[in-house]
Amino acid sequence: MDKTVDSIIYKDIFIVQPKNGFRFSVDSPLLFRFINKNKIFKNALDIGSGSGVLSVLLAKQFNIDCIDAVEIDKVMYECLVETIKMNRYENKIYPHNNDIFRFKPDRMYDLVICNPPYRNRKKGRICKSDIENQARFDDLMPIDKLFSYVRGVIKNRGYFYICYDADLFVTPIYLGRKYGLEPKRIQFLHPNEKSSAKIVFIEFIKDAGVELKIEPPIFQNSKEFEMLLKE
Image (tube, rainbow, N blue to C red; front, side):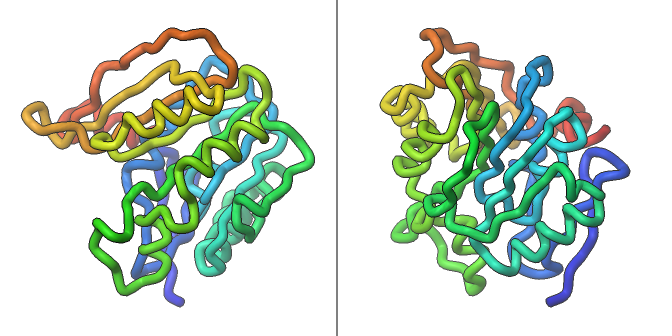
């Protein structure tokens, strides 16, 4: 399989990914930017880590002792392993080629992060690539099951970050409340000032009090958006 090496946000961070097929988009870098930078995280779980975008950005930004990166697809897992080695994070990021619901960690996490698939296969366009379909459709990672799992692996007052289809954002809000993961901050991504939101970024805190902050929106045609993708 042909692969490319691409830098992202930081000039010294490189991502190995397939030349054709599923490649990371702006969702993951923006989800990383959404994380509360004032918090201290000693360990983290990256669910559905793909080629390792979020894991290496976390390792770069935070002094995290251990990041477990779980990816079910073998091709993307190979890219993940290469990404970790290329960025010399073998002592911080630990890759796991596994179904997240079969992954049984021996620790509880300060931080859990996930850019989950959120489309229903019955309603979306089917791609030729199995990898792309896994990244698009929620067959292997049903959202309700994801929240239930996160509840069991995150510490009290631990942080959970996801991005989701803005049209469906009521679903993760409802599920957060259902599983004791209180939504604390949200931010919407719009193509431009006149368009409806496409993506929502949500911060949850386990067993936290009720209070929700709505951050100013991000517009993809703005200078602010460009700056978020730069160092």
